[in-house]
Amino acid sequence: MSKQIRNINIQIIQNVAHSLARNTLRWDQPIPPFETRTPNILESCVAMPFLKYDGKILYKGLIGKAAVLFYLLIKNHPFQNGNKRVAMTTLLVFLYLNEKWIFADDTELYNFAVWVAQSPPEAKDEVIIYIEKFVRKRMLPLKNVVNKVNEIKHAK
Image 1 (tube, helix red, strand yellow):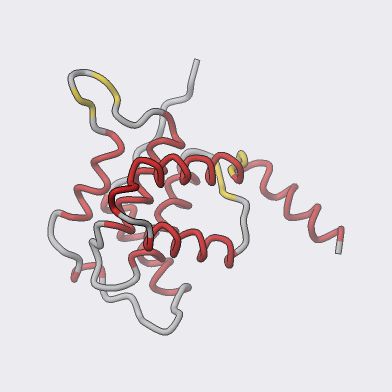
Image 2 (cartoon, rainbow, N blue to C red):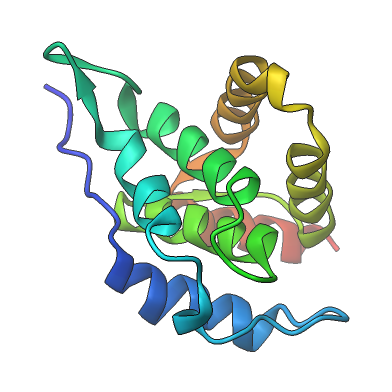
């Protein structure tokens, strides 16, 4: 039996993901306050992965939901600035809530977010499939992340 997927919501994005992105991922341009987001766009991005149509789940499983959430947060621009950073931290928080993590370095995550942002809108379905592959390949159960980090430390 599969485990219930824990949802992410606007409050979690505001209090955790946006806050983390704003305070730790500065780059050259600051992320404006959460309240400056475009009304209803963020809410739409967060609702979409969990929608059903005609009684059928549109985005299946944790990875399917994570992929469309990440894609929409980047492509729909709910924030004035920092959409890729907020999308990445939201993805990580969503996975964390579901006891998973992506094991990748900052450069790989940054390049991946830029690639999604630069993808043509008409390639949406293909890009979401690629996001699913990216996440699936790098996703670990949360309990295994500490072991993986220790392995790398000891190998150096």
